Length: 274
Image (cartoon, rainbow, N blue to C red; front, side, top):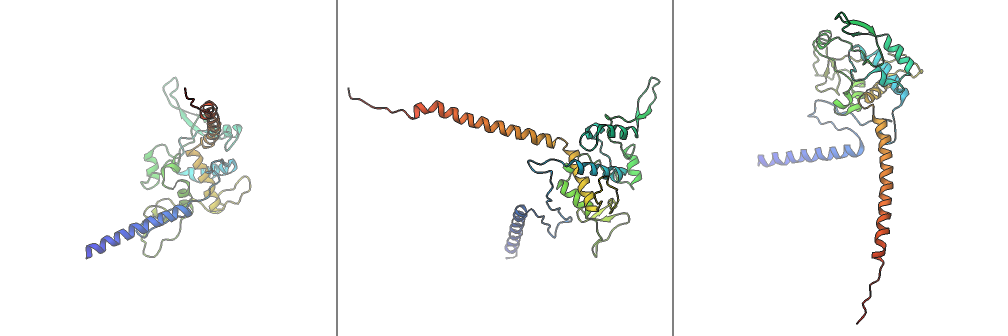
């Protein structure tokens, strides 16, 4: 009898989970079970994720500013070069001046020695630490991850990053936090070593946009989404062209089929007795 009751309870839990997942898929909300150790982020209405939408260059410029003034102190974006930002966040002259302010180690020279030179557009964005060991030593053994593909590397993508940046709060009663850790329900386990990076008016936007925590998180998440998929706008344009050509080809194929088969389908066959 007890075995049957356990089977019934197990099936009921699975059925409830299936119904909850289906409801979440339809309504676009996140479902978190009591057995989970993390809160799942909700699906947010991003403007750049539509089939016919594109990145907002003004938001990307603000997001780059947030990364440069806040995130770049610990995190790197090694897969993005200055030249890839031309026409996206800044002009060519602005990026040339920005890159020239950074000293890049190059070489060896004719004497076999390394030397420092001003940065160029072909250089990647600078790293905060010279190597992984230096990064771990500066962060109590935790290495801040590279953010180039962070949107693709985390379940939930840009929704997860936004929820993580805006989800810091006080730990609930009974939740023991070790020294140096901060409570964030969107991080697995709830304890994260990264302190809250964003503060109201933490940056001074050039266009006068109010720099609230949610606005900064939104802008930097869009910029990180572009870093992970800089070809997204071009891919959408190419897909629109391909679909137009495919539609035209389908219509012409249907017309050609009717043109070739119409004499055979409309003919009348009569039998005459000899």
